[in-house]
Amino acid sequence: MTAPAILALTAGEPAGIGPELCLQLAGESREAGIVVVASKALLAARAKMLGLDVSLHDWQPGQSPVTTPGQLSVLETQGCVSTEAGVLDPANSAYVLETLRTAAEGCLRGDFDGMVTAPVHKGVINEAGIAFSGHTEFLQELCGVERVVMMLATEGLRVALVTTHLPLKDVSAAITPERLSQVTRILDADLRTFFGIEHPRILVAGLNPHAGEGGHLGREEIETIEPTLERLRSEGIQLTGPLPADTLFTPHWLDNADAVLAMYHDQGLPVLKFQGFGRAVNITLGLPIVRTSVDHGTALDLAGTGRADVGSLRTALGVGAHMARCRKAANQEARP
Image (cartoon, rainbow, N blue to C red; front, top):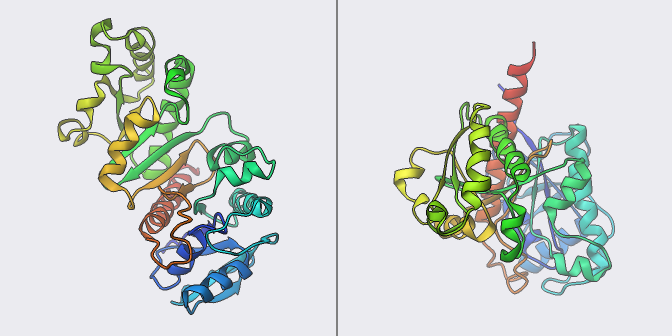
């Protein structure tokens, strides 16, 4: 039998709900070994606040994480200055980034089979004078890759994005043949490697209403998207589109697809979050490691109340474990 995956779980912003979501997992059955990368003092303080009886165990590389209910393995990370729920403190920012660095470097070394991230607060990190635009960009730089792809997934639907956090006025110029080709190749390759899909079927949305209506509602489809997709098809990638986004997300199309490639953030993600908010997972493709995350923010108003829903984190862990297993299987098949 294949040994269960070991996943690093970063606890996120100390003032948010991340620490308590990690603690809630201690009472659940786990299909993967979990190591929480965090301050033990932070976790202990939040457990005491919520009246949770959780035993925290120091973990070192090479050990098997504890799986007994009510217990968590923790890779101690120093530098958490404030543990107060709901109150942001810029002094914690270096600590938050250190948890991410520790988890990612552990994945690159092979200590972990993947990493799962609880939410961080970008604003307070920037207030500390640290240039930080998000998990995705941080991990892209740390892993030294040219391009990464954001994909969100929930039951029955995966949506990847050609562009992510751009003003709408800048989207058209950002959709170049080079970017579209890179994103599509990464999506196709990682669906094979991390999801075990032998021949991925990808639906591609157009940029304009009605996918440009033959050029009457915009020419990006004619001049950029269609020619690029045709070249990619010649490489063996199964692509359908560009399709009008207002009809793409219907059973007629989705029943025969493995993923949707949307041109911009609010073209694809509202549909996915309507279908599965709280049960969705954010996945970073294009990295040499497995990385998944929750589909929500730090929820400062819920921190310390005990009302935070662990559903998205549970899903992120399940998907991360599945991706780790698929990658191991792919690596074994590739060996001579």
